[in-house]
Length: 222
Image (tube, rainbow, N blue to C red; front, side, top):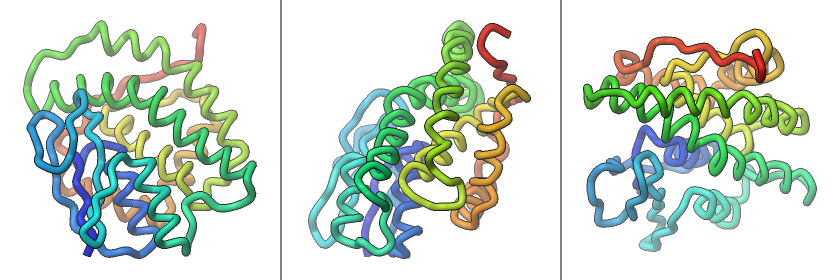
């Protein structure tokens, strides 16, 4: 059985757990806190712990590399399907979620409102939250444009990345207002897929008490 090391609240760990389930590969999750040293997982700033997968005595690091490894080693079904252009679209969405949206949604909103505000019972940096809310509208609108090329009913690393990220946004209380109709519809479609719904239900048993109060995200210049 494979062993997945990573912070269970991190979208990077979540996306690899979902990838393993999608491929129907058995695994054991060994949680690693981003606030504590771990002998296998390298430490990064809060909520950016590197994911590690142990498979057959060999350890693969970093969520993107792990996902590509899974397609190389276990290609049916593929996380990066289609022709070269389609795979490039999937990889760009994965990169955009990982490196542009995650610092705003996970490292700021989720960290401040869920981790600090609820789990650690510490003061929230409201200025950091407000700054993220000012940057997010245009970033979310751009994501909506990218997703027009990726059907919501097809599981791949793009849809996995988006759902994993906005799962943290949901926990942080982020509510997209009516100006984000396309993105809201896309996220709703993802949430109804059995792969994502089952994972959310499992998390809800432990995490529902830590969900933050709603905060609305309006369109740019509203």
